[in-house]
Length: 142
Image 1 (cartoon, rainbow, N blue to C red):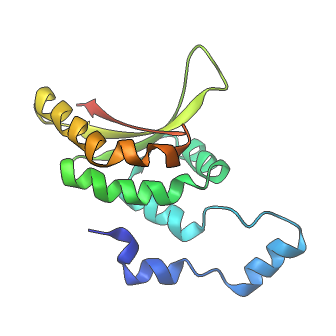
Image 2 (cartoon, rainbow, N blue to C red):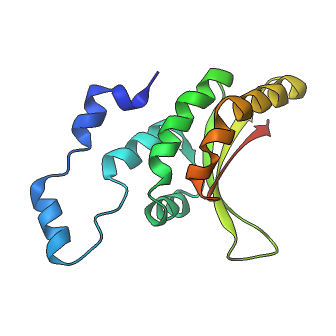
Image 3 (cartoon, rainbow, N blue to C red):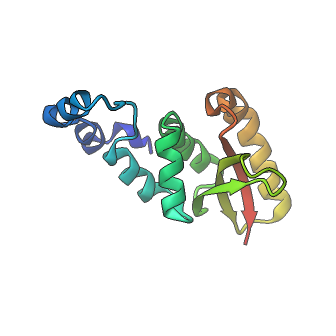
């Protein structure tokens, strides 16, 4: 399922002209994640600590299209696994944080790790540069 081909998806992305005019008048950046994209991401992923995830996506808007693409790719290897988004901070460094996609696994651990390795080789390693070090995709055993 390619979520970006949904008819309602592309229609929802159209910002009303008056909204863009207001942004330009106040001198605000128009580089942001649109509400429709955030709503779609919340349908595809379960946000852990929602406010943190939304804040992170606002700070790093380039992650939103990558997360949409990742969803379709993850589903090839983990079709029924719940997907979670969470901002994770490194314990040793308070300013070192990233968004983590956790694929909740109920499969055999060896099978899950094989699928993750194949996912990495087939897509994630090529897409990694677009994440700019701000996104990690991993499995989480249930």
